[in-house]
Image (cartoon, rainbow, N blue to C red; front, side, top):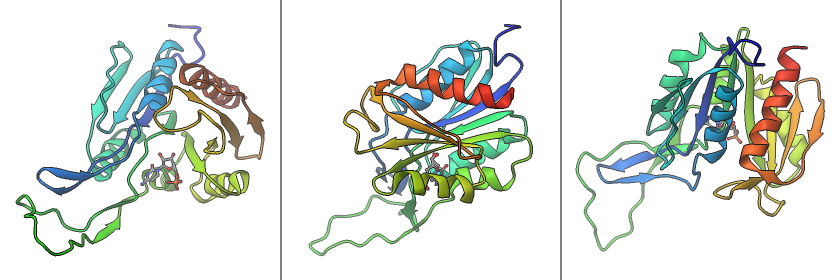
Length: 220
Ligand code: C5P
């Protein structure tokens, strides 16, 4: 694998949703399938990298010599797995749809149905990407942003606030972009405000575009 653009590089990628337990049989989740993160992992491995893929619950699987898949459930689990490996990586991409809130306490028994309404108190989960930005040394750190208004402005602010080197903006305004589907339409923004907008493409193609943007910047 010598001569490939990512040979010798260690890469960390997060993918998928997280599941935040309510009781032993219930959770709060979201519709992320993990496709974008898995495609980013496969492309990185094909380009010669050693990849640690930390994924929330998904039906996807991957079989590649250069990919170590770590399956996790909650945001807290994902946070711990990421920090365990972050010190060893050259590039990290957070593509997971991490829950922003979790139940403040997890019931030890299955909650019983009552005639009354039920309230579940929620608390914030850790922001994994932000926490990686805070302890960043030499890593090239990339996040995703899914914005519905003032997209560029919000994405740029997020890049700054989370101390990122690049951010991938997907617009929900674009048909076929985002969750669940097989296509995506992205804009890549770097920390020097370099901006590149791409056409609607399949997720494997989008993964190639993202890696091209990252590689041109780590070798610059
Ligand atoms: O702030 P927002 O949730 O829009 O940021 C999205 C980016 O942050 C994505 O890259 C996502 O993977 C990451 N994120 C995270 N941990 C969270 C929330 C978001 O890593 N708790």
